[in-house]
Length: 153
Image (cartoon, rainbow, N blue to C red):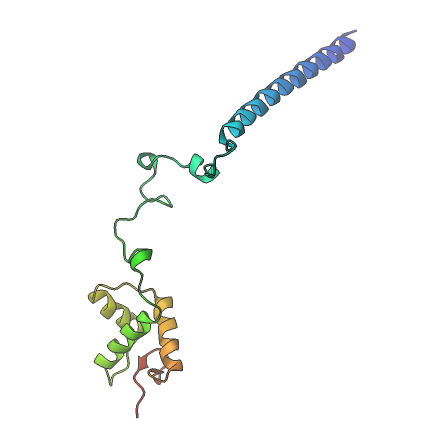
């Protein structure tokens, strides 16, 4: 008798759980349907619907200071509309090599000299520029393989 009552109680609990799940699912789908109905453009409206990414962003005041996408105050590169032309890094590094010639210069020294002039370039950028200069025969690696200098002629 107790086993039958227990089985019946479990079946009732399972039925209540399914009904509650179905009701919650229906309510969630209704909320989604209402939200998408507000985002769909009306006929004749040529503007695009707001992107989901914008809708999920927090207001700027709620962001963490180091959060991705937050505005950085110590900007080291110019905005896209004032970006330097291609090859500018190589020209600046060539000037530094000429100024420090004939002694070989390490990438860290090149970066320090650039920073003293108010220009910030990553070591990868410096390495790429040095490879460009090497291809143009305006720079070569020094004997130790870690330093660069003007070609000795």
